[in-house]
Amino acid sequence: MTTTLVKETFLAGTAEFDQYVMNTYARFPIALERGSGCKVWDSEGKEYLDFVAGIATCTLGHAHPAMVKAVTEQIQKLHHVSNLYYTASQGELAKWLVQNSCADKAFFCNSGAEANEAAIKLARKYAHVKLGIEQPVILTAHASFHGRTLATITATGQPKYQKNFTPLVPGFDYVPYNDIAALETAVAKYDGRLCAVMLEALQGEGGVCPGDRAYFQRVRQLCDESKALLILDEVQVGMGRSGKLWGYENLGIQPDIFTSAKGLGGGIPIGAMMCKSSCDLFEPGDHASTFGGNPFACSVAIAVAKTLEADNLIANARERGQQLKDGLSSIAANYPDTIDQVRGWGLIVGLVIEESATLTSRDVVQAGIERGLLLVPAGPKVVRFVPPLIVTAAEIDRSIEIIAEALSQHH
Ligand SMILES: *Cc1c(COP(=O)(O)O)cnc(C)c1O
Image (cartoon, rainbow, N blue to C red; front, side):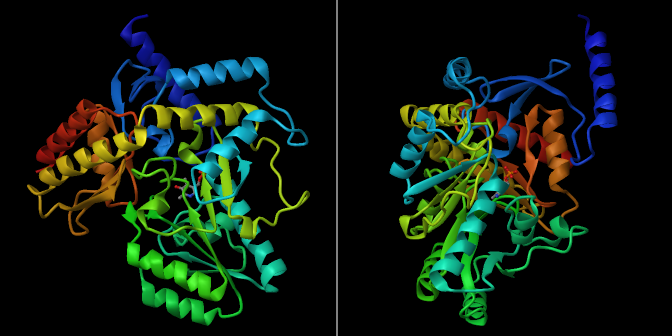
């Protein structure tokens, strides 16, 4: 095939794509065709370093042998049966998650939003059954992100995700993130009605904003005093990305409920809602998911978990994350009027652009695409780096070089 032919196929492909697929994403005009490790290639054969990783999802990168093996073996054996029956891989994954977290039980579903829906339902059942609350309230944070279903856009403290979709789900209110005084006021306001506080350990979509240790200690105390549950949304930071297995380990507290999805299956759709036995209240008929925890998804998630352990990928997330932060910080020092700061945990790092600068996160993402580096915005002024946890020192160095080049061209 000649280059021209490939190019024509690609151009025709995107036009046809837009004719048939709903316009829900501001897509960049490249069509990705294959991947290996931390690299992907587009339909014109151009190579990119993939520091988006399906938005913090492809824990083991692309075409990892452990995933290929798990997928192949399980599809040949048994890929899906109803939750009306026992399957070994679901039990094995639940056991691994329980043995490696503060939780006692797991419920499986297919996505982050669905895991958060399950958490919200469980918290409401807890309120009705254990606390005798008729109109329970859940507090969430401004700038949070919890998903796109009606309950989870309501939980999401960002009006832009809610606009045109009212009426929202009742029983939610919002507080500023990392603000102890504001939370104390809200907890007092909902005295007798509060059923849960739901937060991200680090706000991902909201701008790669890490939780404050002192704040989360106080959140835990306030929840204990008011008998409200603490729900942590670990959908983006969980499964090793933060440099610890779970984001809450960075905060010195334990949640009553937490959710996981993105990185859990390394890119195969799976979500989990985990809870302590004190709020393990679901009974048959309360909640369900047809695909949730099927043998295919669970066996892949087990392969991801075992590879995390065997290849020390959480330590790699810490070390490569530090390398990335150090590299970006030293570039940022050259542009004090453009770059505000570099922040994050492990391999979720945000390059924060000054509010007053003309540069936007989309400009940096565009400059990255031109130079063979995929990045994703987290709001208009934060560029997010979320590479696979297998990323190498050389790949991190390359990404830093590309950012240095992009910023020097802008100036
Ligand atoms: C992505 C994300 C979600 C939603 O996950 P989906 O799988 O897209 O439903 C929820 N919470 C957080 C923190 C996320 O980053």
